[in-house]
Amino acid sequence: MASGGTYKRVLLKLSGEVLMGDGGYCIDPDTINRLASELIEVRESGVDLAIVIGGGNIFRGNMGTASGMDRASADYMGMMATVMNAIALQDALERQGAKVRVISALYIKEVAEPYIRRRAVRHLEKGRILIFAAGTGNPYFTTDTAASLRAMEIGADVVLKGTKVDGVYTADPVKDSSATRYDNLTFTEALTKQLGVMDATALSLCRDNKMPIVVFNVTTPGQMLKAVAGESVGTLVQEN
Image (cartoon, rainbow, N blue to C red):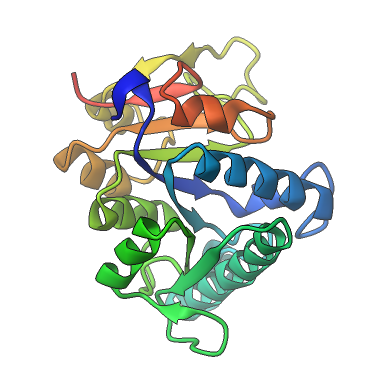
């Protein structure tokens, strides 16, 4: 971290559902424009910013498998949903003047650059916002795992997981009114208690590489900047 607590380089994991806003439409224009504005504020604060985006607002791999679809085929469809979200976010950012690159783990040269680690790092060094699409490019792996992996590869200081909930709770706060929020967790606690911070593969990867995770509510204006500045928002997951 830089002096004053601000992270120098962050990997933001955005769930696809965040782009829906309060509506049922796959991408809400007002929501994506507000997110773009906050992302630009983060970048203009001097922080290197990379984003891994999910595709759950359009299609999830487990949606397909639940209806009998082959798991690999369903996962590839989910990866392409993330590409659609990445292009939409890129457009929203560029309309507000940001310099953005979409990098895809699937080879789709007409709409995105292929993933090359050194090139990705160079984009960050030049002040561009990166959007990583298509997860890891492999079926059976989630975008949470992709976020953890890309964070290691680009040398991020932290994984910020932006969701619709303001942290990690003892139970689902929507279903259980007695659920309480954790301010701090260890990776071991998150894994053994199965709290749904991220999937086990992603958590284990962060634990083994000492990569902290901050889970926060990205739908609340201003929370993203606070998280980047190292302020106490949401739940911090790290080893003691």
